[in-house]
Length: 290
Image (cartoon, rainbow, N blue to C red):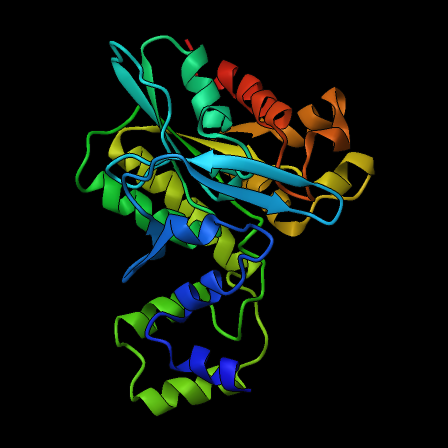
């Protein structure tokens, strides 16, 4: 009961929940720092930090470096005339592979004259991705394209409140404090984003990307159970529908993974191996070139 009470009392409970639930990924707790708007972010200027994904049958070690903006490092792109922004969660970030093996880094090596910015952050939902996009669009030139990869975290149940409600708490919109605690203790169980909220965030990402002057590209990330016939979940189906409705290009990695290696391309149910991330990059190249 005491740990739960301390979580309720935390100034940034989303951040506290993250750092207390990284046991499967030892070493990754050093990657993050709290953020008053995004809940958490990657620490800038990390160099070769060692971490791992520790599963019962195997451990996958990897190292991580970040730039001065807290983005995972990609190889230098000499003479780059354009950029591509990759927004997403731990699959975009690239757990559990090294910097140069994450799929944004592989894309950069394969595309001449293009700088790829890996703004994937483990644990991020589409809500956080939309906030991050808004921050970047307010201060940086538009990239050629924004590659959007979300869904695994959005349906997770972390506590009884949504990401939006947590953001409102950080902004002081829920007052007084006792009211907030009672709300968290008594609210019905719900995911971080309902499917309807997820759809609204993806729509906002598409619109904001186009208003920035960039092309949105949606990635349909697969799961390992789907390699052997498990159906797509509602949020994956939502991504397909929104891509059609908004005439947005869709990278269907579920179909690609099934045809090129299946379950062997995953380390767990969501994260890919080095070969899996390389295949994701290969599938994206026709949508991003020349």
